[in-house]
Length: 357
Image (cartoon, one colour):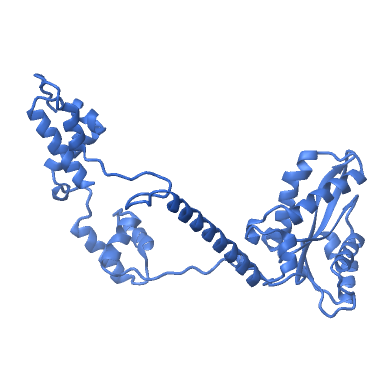
């Protein structure tokens, strides 16, 4: 960039000596007048030699060092507060820069927010399920969509459209999920169910059912929707892509059919970014994250090999690209502004008018 600036300044000076106007030369070079005069000003005035009237003084640096020595545990923001109490205002960034130059910036790490740490590690299907319900309108009346989702694959284990939600529906939807997955009620290991603290979930009937079944009932923390984030995320998707678009289902049968079609598409065709763009059906079937990663790597490898073979075939049929040329594109060149300008003005008579900056 500096070479371009210098060559432009020298070229304009040379053509001005021949009687050309500055604007005419700059137009042929494609350089803005404002850039040219800024470059010319920078050339005549060295920025490093200019002294800013707002630069921190030696006295202010000494005050920073004095406070740091008195309170070695203080960082730049607290030092700013101490100096402000003394009637001296320095920005926190200025104090930080000075301390950093002195090597007095200590490493600092914040404690991770507890709500960002999940209380579970799901490494295969049917370890943990999430359940919740959301509203929809059927025949102008409020009904509910009740679902159970697998936290590993996002597969909808069981779902039902019901007019009301109570302890009986919670029991029924969990039993339906066990049947759909071929899990016996006598199995020693059953999926844990993550739910919120709604009354159907916290009722004594529901808790007695899970205790008798030997299954875990995990309650989300108060005001922590992230504890059941996968269920909430599914409801966000189905509301935007299905329920809100329909608005009001004519009857229960229509609601069951339309929502069933959406869930079928959600399982088998809709890619999920959180599943590396695989579908829940595929992830639920593979049931192994390492195998999914290997499959993704293989897809990437095949794509690269196919692309490599394509360009190799193109090169065989045509001229191989030289240095600076991209496949399928022309040669990239660095244009010399002096050569272009000389070609433009070679056959033009000198202009008697001179332009001064």
